[in-house]
Amino acid sequence: TASPHFRPRCYAPRPAIGPAPRRERDRMTYAKVTQRVLAFFVDAMILVLLIAVAEAFGVPVYDDMLIVDLPADETGAARKDVAPSLFGLAVTIALVWGYYVGFEVSQYQATPGKIAMSIRVTDLAGNRVGILRATVRHFAKFVTVATGFIGFFLAIFTRKRQTLHDLIAGCLVIARQK
Image (cartoon, rainbow, N blue to C red; front, top):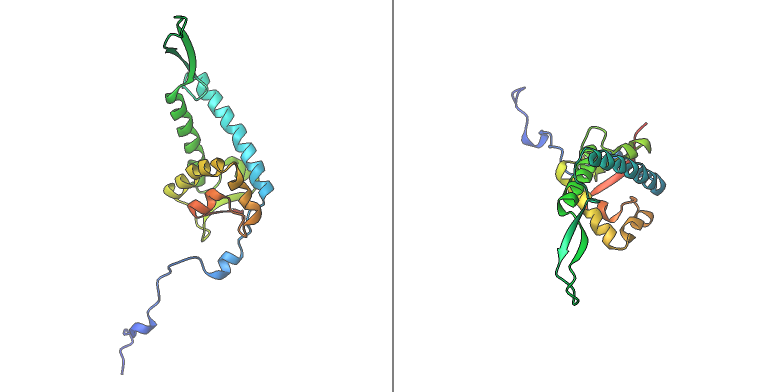
């Protein structure tokens, strides 16, 4: 007879790998395009305020300009031109990246705009995204914009209402469970 502590290998529990069970994924409600647009505007207003506060404290941001000496023109007159500060651009990119990635990897999985619209960012299985995936999603927005904003309109036509940057990063934006 078999020992009570012996279990044949075929009865060993299998580790959970792959996407969430079908019943979990079926319960996901994808965010409406209007919710996403309104969340974007709320976040944009907050970011404008954050950048204004940073600028008030002397932090250089993208709208800081440098006066650049250019070679004299054909009449011999010295020319001056205004160019955006590369350091200010880097500070602004870092601030916006920190805002989106920081909030999307948090326990809320959403920026304040998304929280206001009751939506959150997840991976394809409905789990919280990590820093790498959130970073890829954030910088993939540049690709979405480079398509002439067509990448945003994909949310209207895809079954899971994903934009181009969601597709690139393997993310979903879903409604918060009540």
